[in-house]
Image (cartoon, rainbow, N blue to C red):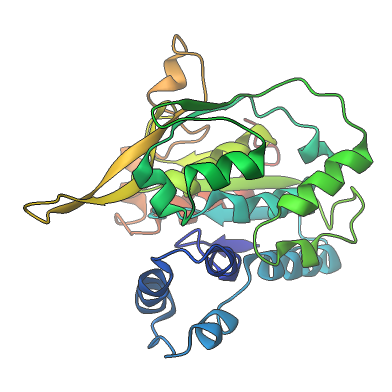
Length: 297
């Protein structure tokens, strides 16, 4: 089975944006419709969201088809995927690995800076955020999201996971009760220099669950600044994005902290063999799967 993902954006993201009354909802709808759906955005926002694909639904149907046909290998192609919203990928990991995913310590840390721009981006205020999270942050403070050893029952983990599922994704996983829909024998993740942000996160989480990284290293480092927050300068009206968080996927002394090398990397002669085709990595991987009975990380 081959799944090509050009973006980590789907209906789940826009339902969440609509719920939070985020100001960039319409512009993001226009961007996704034009860039990925190749359609004109419907005038009515509800209609535009309703006509978008649901990633959780697509992924579950794919796994059911794989199960029905006893398909052993899954290739998830994230080449050129500039990202989107990481949370919509998490239900798919639960679909493939069940409780094993919920119990997996990804050993990743995120550090986020609170600023008026960050609150504006999320269509909220610092007071509202503190009330919702029972916290007392001030602007200039950092929020630390670090991997922690927590002892929770499987039922508690599932309940928490369903409650935090973005958009309508919970509708497609609430009947699983910790069991996977289907677990492929091998999962391969194709990446290249353009695999960024949420796509990089998805690739990394899949790798932590045992998937095999294939292709070219991402231009993004595992330890890097993240989350673009839009701004506009008062006088010049210049617009841009500034990072409001830092991610740490490896120890700073780990050689993979700056460049995350794939497990399988095509060489020059491989590209030459396929006439430097833009899908050389895919063609090469398919031949590797056919010719090698046991591909290991």
